[in-house]
Length: 195
Figure 1 (cartoon, rainbow, N blue to C red):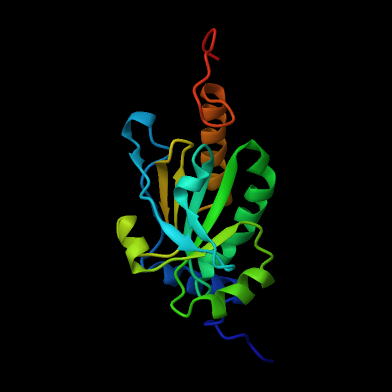
Figure 2: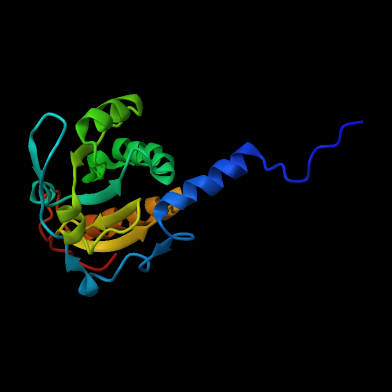
């Protein structure tokens, strides 16, 4: 009677173990939850090209809450997050939210274009490089994401794979807080009293 070997690991578990390895660390880390407004620093400006060759600047998104995600086609955890980001883009874009994906693939658009088409990515993707990564503190692990408030300040940094709900909570917190204190263009609005 055959006996299953004790070393057998389920395919999903093996895949999960392999996925975490591309982050370059054992596990993920976050630099706190959404930071208080007083402790947020300006997000570095960039000018990067999208698949159509159009230049995209972070300044183009001033007045929106932005999820800036550094990723690569070969990164397993990045592939896990992308469907969440597609959903967030669809669900929150009318509330002043946008996702920008910064591909760190060295092979460039020949690899990235078919990948984002296959994944049905509905948000802006640009091609990054080491200079871009250095602007954001030397991105050393993929995925690395930054939640940026409507005034262009980094409100949260997430390094490695995090749960969908953690992203969603941060996005909603920024949208709700800033909707209460800002107009559609990110301008202050007078309030009769606190909410």
